[in-house]
Image (cartoon, rainbow, N blue to C red; front, side):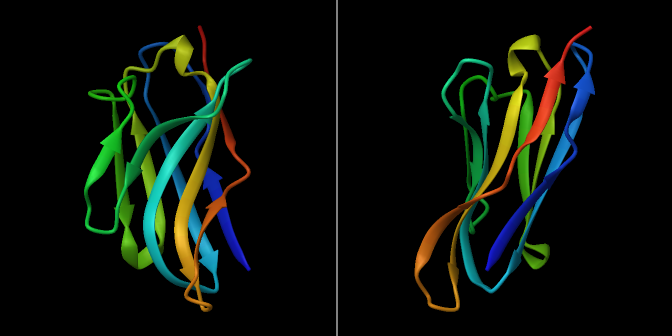
Length: 120
């Protein structure tokens, strides 16, 4: 079994910073991409940022210039540093990994989410 566990959510004031981390564990053979998605109140889940095994990244327009995604391949961990947070960044942030288990079949796995609230 594969588990993704997020940490680092919480309450932060507008303009503040917060860092999220997500560790993938279990019978993992190879991880292709890891990323962060979010779902705000009354909204659909959306991509925030993704980092591929070669280190390349993609960001949602809303995250560009404020958020930084990074990855530690040795630790199967992905990070999201969020600066200049806005109330509209309030959401449950989900970790995602596209990986293969010992069966060599690639699948999407999700964490349970961590709540980020931006409010004064």
